[in-house]
Image (tube, rainbow, N blue to C red; front, side, top):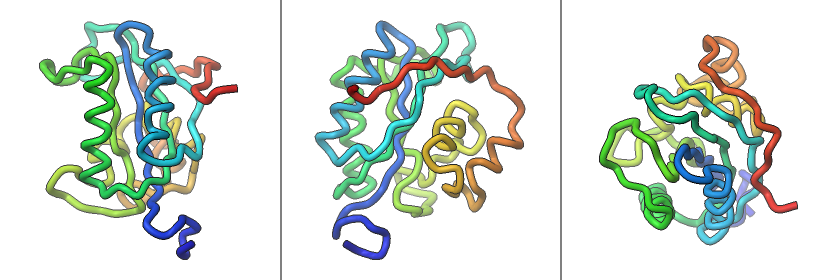
Length: 171
C-alpha cells in the first residue's frame, strides 16, 4: 500500500452516474456492476432524482456517484466509461440531451489538469447539485477546485434534486 491507503498502482476515482431514458435505475445498477470490471467499487451514494440541466424538455434524471479504486490511467478510465455507456445504447447526438446512461469522471486521485480529456476534476461538477449532493454523501471533505464539496453544496441554490430512497449496491 502507498500512503493514500490504495494498493500500489490503484487510484481512487469518483464517477457520476445518470440516466433518464428507459429503466434508469436498472441502468445505473448495471453500470455499478460493470464498474467492478475496471476497478473495485468501494462505495456508492444514495440515488437522487434530478431536474434536467440545460435542456429542460426531457424527463428527470436518476443520478448517483460511485467511488472506485482503479489501476487505469485517467485516459483509460474515461475510455472504459465510454465503452460502458455505448454498451447501454448511449449516443452523443444532442448536447445535454436525454441519455440511456451517462458516466462522468468527476475526480481522479486529486489530480488537476485542464487538458487533454479528461479535464480533472470535472469542469462543471462544482456547479451542479446532482453531482455535489451524492459526492457529499460519500466524502463531504473531498475537494473540487480547491474547496470541500460540502461547502460548495451549501452555497448552491436548490436545483431540483430529490432523494429517491433507492440504492445501487446489491443487498
